[in-house]
Length: 223
Image (cartoon, one colour):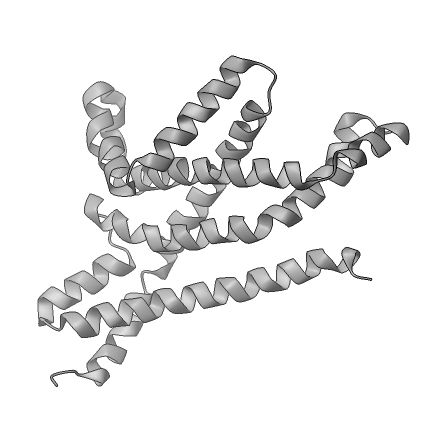
């Protein structure tokens, strides 16, 4: 068996140098996904049918199109239609692509989270003298956030992994570095296993942080 475990572990520090760019893309895309997801949720809950329909079309489209196709459409396609996008760099295109796609999933998560909050709580808030804005800010949104956190966390984990597709646009991140190391040495298994371990470590660390946050949010509900 021609497997060099020492070489594999020697690659990990070199690959880890690209963790910042991977996390930067994932965090920025997550922020974009949350913002757009909340807007889509509001549109889906709107009494205006046209807004509801537009949100449904957005969600259907971005959930159906493969991530790689979306990245190519944004980075290579948009400049053909709108010349202003010719100045867009690969990282920006990747963040937009990741964020727009995951916003479609986030919207459904947020909508389900708001539905999971008992309607009677809003009625109780209004009966207690609160305005709707106060009720949402003090009662509804905190509970919806707690309910949405596990699934939203899964979106962030997906984003960490999906950043590996940014190499197709020329972005040098974790997977791109591993790929270059593999071609330089022809040690493909060692290089790809090394980057797999790095991704695994990132997911483990984030999952630990999320579990601590979930326990913190659960404290007021414990008896």
